[in-house]
Image (cartoon, rainbow, N blue to C red; front, side, top):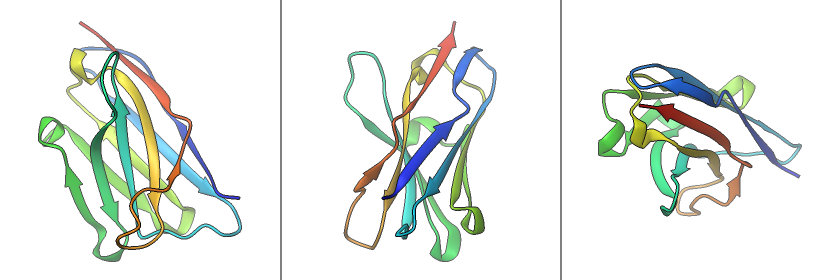
Length: 119
């Protein structure tokens, strides 16, 4: 069974930084792409960033471009999200997700880690 475990969330002041990590484990783990999503208070879950392992292509939602960086370590089955210049509106539960193959979408999810940005 595949497990995705997020870590690194916490409370930070606006303008600060946090680094989230997501470690994947499981004998059957395979990945085409991994991504980060978030769900703020009273909001729907939204896409934040994605990395595809082939060619290390990255994609970001507009609101985090220039502030967040996604990176991955294929050997460790781990993906990171470096978040700089955090804003109050970045407050959310951040979820890691895995897509096993092109066209499959994200079908494996972590439990989430809370990020709270104080203004």
